[in-house]
Amino acid sequence: MMLGACSGTQSALDPAGREAGEVATLFWVMLVGAAVIWLAVIGTAVFASRWQGRPVSERAGLRLVLWGGAIVPTLVLAALLAYGLRLMPALRAGEPALTVEVTGEQYWWRVSYRGPDGAAIESGNELRLPAGHAAEILLTSADVIHSFWIPSLAGKLDMIPGRTNRLVLHPERIGTYRGVCAEFCGRSHTFMAFTVIVMEPAAFEAWLARQAAPAATAADEGAFLANGCGGCHSVRGTPATGTIGPDLTHLADRAMLGAGLFANTPENLRRFVAEAEEVKPGSRMPSFGMLPPQDLDAITAYLGSLR
Ligand code: CUA
Image (tube, rainbow, N blue to C red):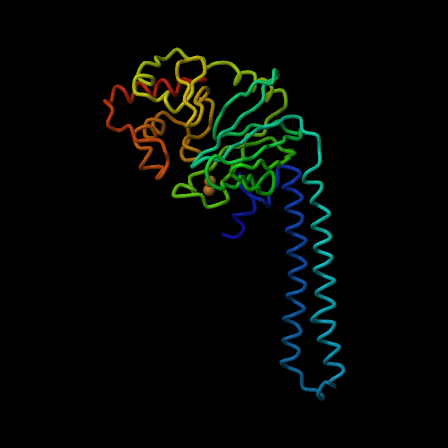
């Protein structure tokens, strides 16, 4: 079970980025340091319990307390602190190739890229980054304190209402990772996750250009609009311009639904629309299970076609 944490899409010990690599190294250095101190303390205790020789003089006892209790711990902790501090500026250095704004909301992630022309490209619950390039993530919150953490790429950073925190990432390995909210933020805190996809830079540029375009769909938007979905959600290029919930313009391109809750399949999409309040307690998305089945089918078909 312990070894299960050593790899996977959400492991700080299997780094896929420069910052996570430094965090992992710091962890191992601290672990070895702690193990050496633990062995010394236990060794001393075992030795003392078996000590059969003559009583220790007061002077020797004082020397032991001074060295063992003050000088050696101070030296060890100062060395570990200096090593840790040395890593910190590196975590903030680097001229970013792109900037992404991420806002934590109960219980999802508003993601906003900048297009080549500087215009915002809205998305949600998925973060794509080019491999080998520094990315600056500007973090804030719309309601309560959340915490942005992609264990495979970097350490975590809080998202605080009214404040913007800056995190610079250097993703190095192409792949799909999992990010989570690492600060308890309400009933569905545990259902507040997101997908992170590190791509070839050229593929990322092509993807971003596609995201900037309005949704391409042949499906009928009638049921989606008639049932008021556009009051909370935007689908660019349609009359749906709500900003309360995630932008759904290219929903079919996303790997997961409901902020990491379900894989993005037609069955799960229908279920989320029908049972949002049940599957995601406390979220602002109401359940639409009372709609006629043909409306649910039409909304599901429409959303599933948004590429
Ligand atoms: Cu957001 Cu926990």
